[in-house]
Image (tube, rainbow, N blue to C red; front, side, top):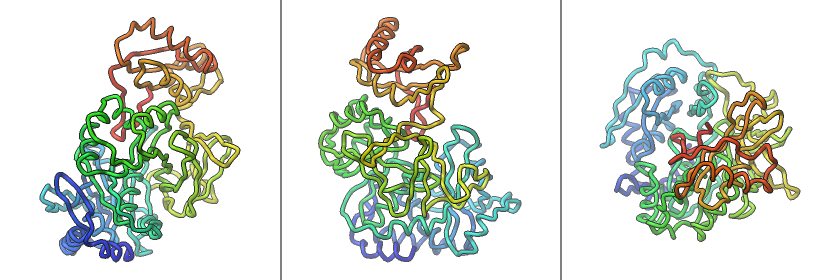
Length: 448
């Protein structure tokens, strides 16, 4: 961690954070870090597990760095649903809960229940004299898993980054491995971090125009929302040098649609997991979903079509779940299904939990979505499995149309279009027209 603070001092004259209309330098950040370090002495003990309630801001980032220097285990929580916040506090054994108001003032409360919490993994972090990070899984397939990282190890993986004068928009949230990856990457390079107050397409595109943002990390779903809402036409996005996308599979036809709408920006796929960290990857091109994992900290292999990772930055373990997805020698089963190309590139084609079983035959939603998205008048589609007594499931699709269409006509048109492009069992049988897609707060599709 010392190397990062020293590097931030070298960047003291550079712009660091743009948030809520205010511009802060790296010198401002360091002063706020020192202020918080002085405030938390005597209130937050070394080694305490500390929850920060709220998303990214100048103040939350300053507090994050202060807690790292204080060798705390940090639990960023962006949820606002009371019972979900309480669950995360309970599942991670939080000792202190910190809230930050708009002026940056801290409010620290004690979680009395932490006295009954015991974790050998957190004890290990404390014994090593390291800071820790607890992240939670999305919880889409059950109770969210609490994952413990050695935060010093995670931070140290950015030490080789070179200084660059770029402006990144931090789209992914404070409690997301991708959001933290962007934050640490920016600080290690001395880049400017533009933080959105909300994540509506007009607001995000307005920030890009106003602050001449160079790099936008986002999900495929959100990028499609930008196109559907025509926000990309309302604002000048010509400053964008690169758009990185991840967190869910990208239909190839959507990738081409995004490239057509934003032709000047390079489109690069990112990949990683909360358990192993974000991998350095190379995209074959801006119009290809093929990637190559090229990261000295991460090994990979493919077993039965599933991607397995082993990294130097992977979690120490789960606090509230078994390690069954990890092998004895450290390989993590990601649940991501891949196709291999002859030249060493791979393509992420979907999650094993999203595969639709139609009478024993497997259907990948992203393959069907890519074909349907090629049709005229269809602006978005989500494919999922619908229970069927004869085949177990049939392929269903929720579709957003550019203009109204008679449902029976749409069904015939979809079948006719897919007939020569998909096997018959992959063609959507149940089609529902919707005004907009259901998405998570991470802007990932909800498949139902």
